[in-house]
Length: 482
Image (cartoon, rainbow, N blue to C red):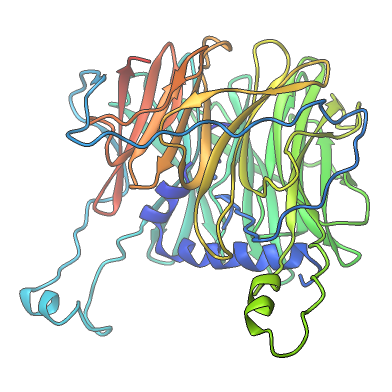
């Protein structure tokens, strides 16, 4: 789902503890090679070693998707191709509080630990969706007594709205996920209990009216450093998440009736025991879902060491850290969450995908955006790629121009009023936001108005822009040329 997957760069700006998750991501990468940074919205899988050649299967496309071309940004001022829609004042989550740093503090490197300095990372935004009434955004906000999970409902111009507090959450969870069920909102809120990560399901009725919240079942044993996904088809909802099982990481799914929050859930595995499978994403398709995951591949066996005394050859042949690689697999699921096809491998050997986003396509297929890491272990960023998975199970790479190297998970933003209109937004190497609408000649480019903000949802060609301001997040709506 678009937005969630935001967002990595925006998450790092807004919430300092999330920096530790990048380290967690690297630890998960080690787990993928047998040792066992949502998502960064979140979850990179770095690795220096080339992937082993995958066996050719009927589900593997005849040709691997080529890397998307990249051209460096041109020097000079950033042009403006967007205009901001008029609003009396932006809707805001949080309070604007600036750090009180004195001149002496600045000269000696900053304030002391005992100085009273407000938390500058008080708001972390989660996924955003657009509908006929405006925009819905989830968030976490640090307040006295702990972190609170929130859902905000904004008007079409993002000048008005309201915030519903879902209560205190513990540990370092991600913002909630949600999906509309009529006038109600189905929620999946991550939290932590004595056993570790967990997910709480809830139903928020009459969201723009009384907003009555009721809680349903809970799922324990969820990996807190992984993504999870929630979608709805017809009268059945489907939740997917990753958990440790039998010494491996596996993806589980649970289908349930969203109107009955008190029902008992019976999650079932969607991946077999074997290699680690993590970072699930869901996209709705006619009659079911698309499921995308990252599957770990074993690191190649180390080369034989050269005879003693040839130190130079040893350095050339031996990797300092062989942590394995991964590939992206996409599977069709029916409305009950049961597999309706064999997994389709959409990444070429050696691509080393780090993070991904998934949205439905107008033709009944799906789009997968991801980054591949071609750098050394621990290095951030990689080349951005976009793949169109077609309904018949084939796929093709989508050519995109612009600055494609950067950090964080790329965000795929599907226009809520027109399923054929897809926008791609990503953080470039210089920290700027590069974005564009996907068409026959797609080009990602920055914009002076959007600089310092993040595009998180779109409807009728109008994009919701989120900006940090002190400890708060402000929202506005912009219209941008392709």
